[in-house]
Image 1: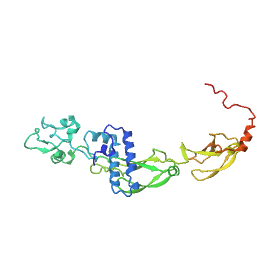
Image 2 (image 1 turned 90 degrees about the vertical axis):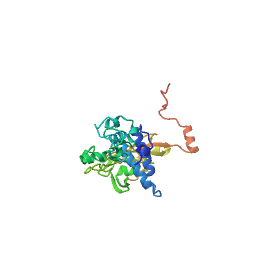
Image 3 (image 1 turned 30 degrees about the vertical axis):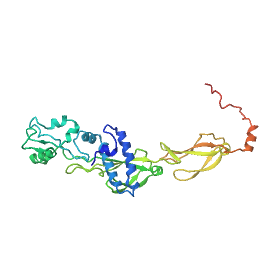
Length: 315
């Protein structure tokens, strides 16, 4: 796999939030479901998911930055001579060397760099394996890394609960249950579906599907309440009315009390999420053109209480 930083288009100094934002943008751009006519989309999506899996795991990212593992998560043998074999090379030289120098192909002898008895740095792990058996390789079985994916969910699916088919980074499609009332940022775990483990018997990681709720044109959420901006006419606000309003479960009839003002909140009990309510926020819509009868009435009308709504407004 190519450098995960290059795949996500972020610098090596990128914060976790910058990596998350880059992944979300690219995953949405290259998801196979949204690119059915682009054969390369699946491969790009897999690479993006794998890069994110490595860089979103702080321990794996640190090991990659130190050169201990490669971009696929596999152990990388450090170049240098057999540990303790002489001043010409070894683990200390590798650890203290600039990171860019760690990956140069160099030949070493057991007593240092020079002719005779040398081996290529890339064969170091194999050398240890032959000398001491497979147990000499650094580290034992290691659980596979988790893969984090963004799951875009329509507002009503999140509110009501739903089953969605999702495409995994390896191209498999599975049905994923979205629980009723799922919120933005809810994490759904798919056990054993992540990166394969390293070493015999090592378990695979998980897939962590992070819910991203798409906005709805009418509804928004506050806790377990559902809010709806409800336009009403001047006549309905002044005299009261019965109007039909949409809810997350379908339309219902709501009573507008007389003399309702702009911004009044009317409650539909139990029409929210898990015991929450739906709140209709009234917005009084003024006439769009001249209304001679209304103008004639208002020109001779004086409020009974004679109050000034701007009383007390002094800078």
